[in-house]
Amino acid sequence: MAKDRYRQFCPVAMAAEVLCTRWTMVLVRELVAGSTRFNDLRRGVPRMSPTLLSKRLGELEAAGIVRRAPIEGEPAHLGYELTEPGRDLAPVVEAVGMWGQKWVEAEPSLGNLDPGLLMWDMRRNLDPTPMPEIKTVIAFRYPDQPEERRHWWLIVEPEAEVDLCSIEPGFDVDLDVETDLRCMTAIWMGLTTVRKEADRGRLALTGDPGLARAMQDWLGLSPFASQEKRVG
Amino acid sequence: MAKDRYRQFCPVAMAAEVLCTRWTMVLVRELVAGSTRFNDLRRGVPRMSPTLLSKRLGELEAAGIVRRAPIEGEPAHLGYELTEPGRDLAPVVEAVGMWGQKWVEAEPSLGNLDPGLLMWDMRRNLDPTPMPEIKTVIAFRYPDQPEERRHWWLIVEPEAEVDLCSIEPGFDVDLDVETDLRCMTAIWMGLTTVRKEADRGRLALTGDPGLARAMQDWLGLSPFASQEKRVG
DNA sequence: CGGGATCCAGTTCGATACTG
DNA sequence: CAGTATCGAACTGGATCCCG
Image (cartoon, rainbow over all chains, first blue to last red; front, side):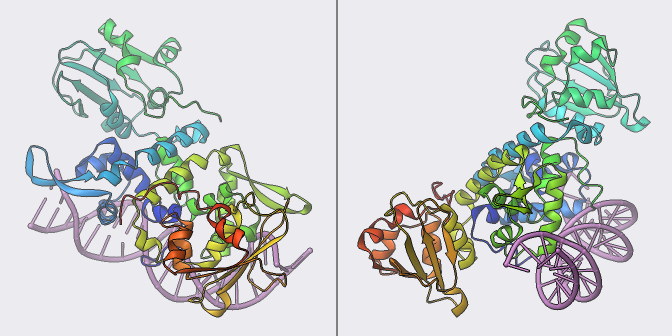
């Protein structure tokens, strides 16, 4: 099957041969979102086996979508970098995601909860602008989750990438967010808001009141949150 | 594998679960292009087994993308009709196709020649506006193709669907087009033009001179022909 | 002819373990 | 950190057959 694929000259078919194999679209989303290291990519597609991830990356490289390039600051390691054709896949990912947000029912999506994925996405989209310009630590607690996936910390420092930990980082916590994973995911997806859920008592904020009030602002939502759902 | 798929709440992943299984994107392209009958769909995805086509249509129905509906004029038969979510996949198909047209090299595409597919697509996009308002028959001959795929006829009648035959329809032919399949496909894809190929002697037009002159106009090109290629 | 169902062989994928 | 190795399970494609 590897050799004879759709055998259609149509560009949709030619593109689908590369893009519409299992996991590829999700992997491309990770790449477009900015991950370049093998293990960072793994965090974005945790259920994909490393074997298959490696294979898919090889296929994307062969298709000219990614290229191996030294990781910034670590010249010894090669990461996976999008080429120009690869970056140009952003509209494809966007179209797929917008369609999904609009037409896939919320219930099945919220059946696929994963705190690691959620926190990894939140880490990426967090907007420090409305936060104080000092190191800020936000703790998330999901009491409905098993012990090892229950506690997470986001560490925001001016002029640096946001850090995500799943083990106590040892710093003072500025804001503590306690909620169930489903609720936090729904907020992230734009299906509800911090205020609504706080008012309903499904989300508790403890600590810096200013930080608590601004949560909806610094919490960057999913890139697709702006698209209204039309179903379920 | 059928039950546990990506297990990600991300809309890209939820959409990809339905759209990015093998053949599905190509099938959706056919549906978006307007085919509704099982056997019309087959002509658009000739290398897909009927078993798999049937299965995929069932999945699309379960996903709310198509619905069974009586075929116009044939109430006894049920066709596959796009629902509103299904019609809303047009931007996704468009994004994928535009990317393919822009970034997939021409050479591999032109290695997937198929006269049946090409003629089926041409039938669909032919624009009768610049043609005389009477029944017009155009014959295509591909001398490089095996006997049974060599001759094709498009029959254009005012106020009717364009008809495609692969057996002599018995009507007078108004224009005869003789070329190789690769050349005709490249024209259809917007990689070259009727005039260029005629000048190079790779395409011969015999019959009604007006019809011949206007060929580039009535020959509707691929929906992606307007996107310039950036590679090979 | 339209619209499938069945069966079989060949691939691909997922889970887990392991290595440089 | 960055991948390979392995093996059973699931999926795909092709051929064939069926039914109204």
